[in-house]
Amino acid sequence: MKNFTFRINENNYGVKILSHENNMIELEVNGTSYSVKMKEEIKKVKTPTLVRKPANAAIEPVKINTVPSRAKIIAPIPGVILSINVKVGDTVKENDLLLVLEAMKMENSIASEKSGVVSAINVVVGQQVLQGEVMIELE
Image (cartoon, rainbow, N blue to C red; front, side, top):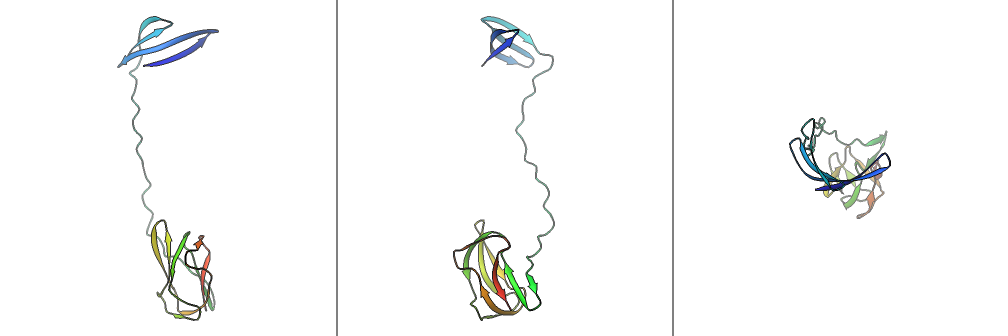
């Protein structure tokens, strides 16, 4: 089955394990066969089981960084811009779709959390954005 080399008191010993059942092992040391009885039965290694933590409470919606008269739409997660549904100067209402962000092969619709006028679009279709990056500014 398995071969080992042990060094004991500057002497090398070639050990070959021939078989083992329960607590009996048949082995050969430098060509001489031995039967060895183990104190305890060898325990088999079990396949590890994946244990996950329970899911946290519901995920909170992404907050917009707001300044009294301005709002910034930031990327909630890293991803790629798939489409932009507004232009500079467009008037948007609360919950209007602003753009679609693809992250981990899922499309995430980014909507406005307040009404206003689009004052700047800082991204283009196909651009990769990092989490926290300002994508659109509203007045």
